[in-house]
Length: 89
Image (cartoon, rainbow, N blue to C red; front, top):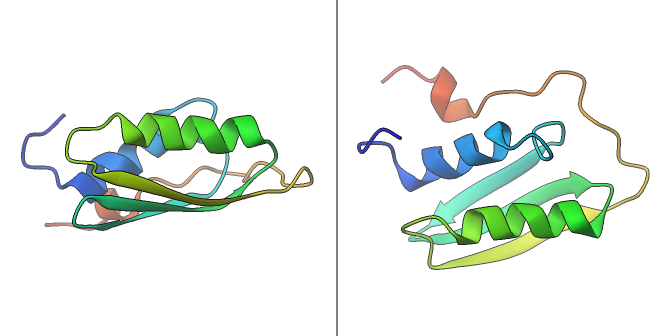
């Protein structure tokens, strides 16, 4: 991982790199190490997996898991890379 990458970029990258989570739209915001996860997944297990994944990252103080569990949530057709990856610096 690029040592110059921001915590926001690292969190977004981890969410799209994880095979079980990449197919769902999960967004993350960072406020001084407090990461808020939002989005929708079909199972509580996926919601908890996202939280656990992010909680273990260096620089994360706490995770606010606001992901909605909806068994009717489908996979997104084409996973999108984090916006920070698309934005030139």
